Image 1 (cartoon, rainbow, N blue to C red):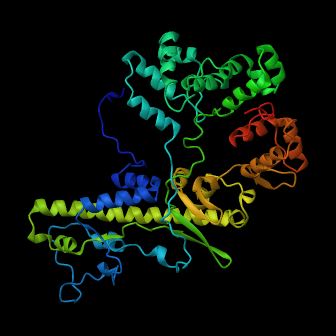
Image 2: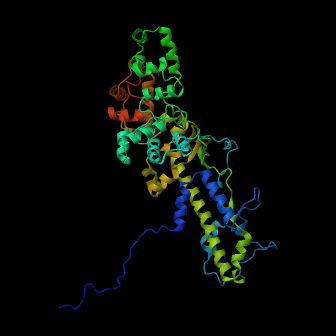
Image 3: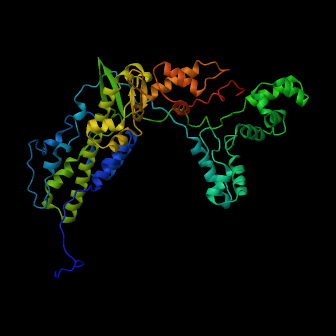
Length: 479
C-alpha cells in the first residue's frame, strides 16, 4: 500500500505561454488608438515631463547626430565605463536614439495639400442637451429620470423609449416619468423630446405662444387631412376660409419636423488627416502627416550623464535610468505605430485603387480580418489603426474604417461592396415617381435585374442605414 498522501503539498514545474500586459505593451496599444492630434498632445506632454526627451530644432544639420555621440572637441567619444550600469542600452535601443527616418525614403511631392484648414464640428444634440441639464435646477427625485430620457433622444430630437418602459427600467411611477418628460420638453431646441410628429409641432407652437391658434388646431385635429392636402374639407369643417387655412399652413411650414437635425449630423468635423494618399504618376504614395508634430530624440547631455553614471549617487542613477528607458520606449512605440499605420494604409491603397481613381461606386469589399491575415497581426490591431483616423484622398477626407465594407456576390460571380449597393438603392429612389414610391420588394427586383441578388429585408436594412424612409413615408407630403 502506498504511503503517499495525495493532499501533501509539493512543488511542480510547468512550462506555459501567456501574454503579459506590460506597461510597454499598454503604451503601444494606447498609441495605436490615438489620432494625429491626440498623438501630438501626448508627445508634447511627455516632452515637458521627461528631461531625456528633446525636440529637434527645425533645420537642424544632423538630426541623427545622436548616433555619433561626439564631445565638445568634435571627436568621437567612446562610452565611459559603466560600473553602475548593467544594461546595454546601445545594443537594444541604438536605432531609437535618433528620430526614425524610415518614412523619409521617398521625396514628398511639392503639391502636398495643406492641413492647416481643418474642418469644424458642432456639438451633438446629446452634448447640447446634457449641457443644458447640468445648468438646469432639477428636483432631485427627477434628475435620474431626466438624464435617462435625454440619453434616449435620437439625433432628430425624438424620444425613442415609451414612458412606461422607462419607468419600469428606473423603478419609478409613470407619473414621475411624465413630469420628467415635461421638463425635458422645455429644453432647446423647441420640439425636442417629442414622441411623434404631432407632439413635436405642438410643442413648438406652444413655446411660440400659438397654443390656441388655428395652426395648433390643424396640427391637433386635422394632421392626416393636411398630409393628404384636403384643404377644402378642413375649411368646411372648421367654417373658415381657404385663405385662413393657407395662413395657418404657412405658420406650420416654418416649424421643424426634426428639431435635432441642426446639431451634429453631417456637419464637418475638426480633424487633421493622419495620412495622405498622393498619386504621383501611375502610383499612389502613402505619406504620414507629421505637420505640427514634434520630432523627438534623446537629449545628448542627459545621455552622457547616464554613460558616466559612476560619478552619480545611486538614487540619481536609478532615476536617470528610469527616465531614459521611458524616453526610449516612447520613441520605439511611436515608430512602431507609424510603421503599422503605414503598412495598413499600403494594403488599403492596393485594394481600393479603383475607388481612389473613380469614386464610391468602385469601393471594393474589404474585411479587417483579411488585412490582419496579410500583415500577420491580430484583427484588433487593425481595428485600432483604422479607428478615429482619417486619410486625405482624391475623393476627399475619409475615415479609414470606411474603406472596410462587406460584400455581396453578383450574378457574374463578382463580389460588390455594400456601399456600391447602397448607392444603387439611392439612385433608384432618386428616380422613382414620388406619388408612387417603390416598395422594398420592387427595389430588390430592380437590383436583381442589374445582377445584384439581395432580399427585401436586406434592402430595408441598407435603406435605413443611408437614411431613406420607407415607401409610405416617402410619399409627397406637406413636410
